[in-house]
Image 1: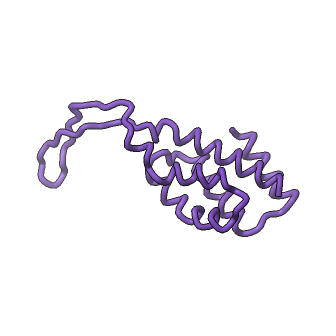
Image 2 (image 1 turned 135 degrees about the vertical axis):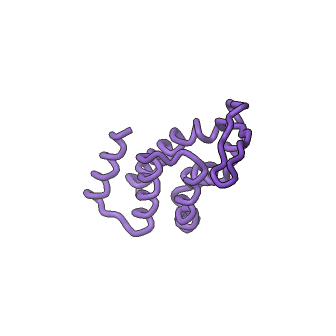
Image 3 (image 1 turned 120 degrees about the vertical axis):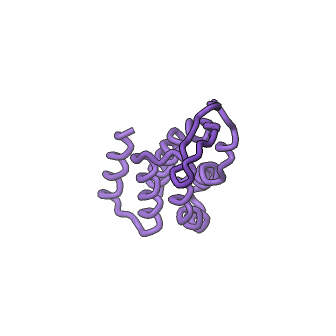
Length: 126
């Protein structure tokens, strides 16, 4: 995984990069090398959707970003834990919360890595 990061930085240093591609690379970099695996990663991908729409070369990358940001994978539950009791601070009550692990949380890091690979390959071609 770090090999693609080094490869991306070397390509940017060698070839140069325009503003649109630098924003796309930055968002993919942030989502790959941070702990944002949940639905909040969608907020990072919001500006990228418009840039990918404007750039016709990144069709597969556009599909991947839409799949990440649509949240469809977050509706499929892989594991559910019943019986977690959470204490509510202000009222002093206890509330029963059902926790679930979704397919999006499991698959999203791999999809982010694939997005990074597609971006680097498209960047090398252009």
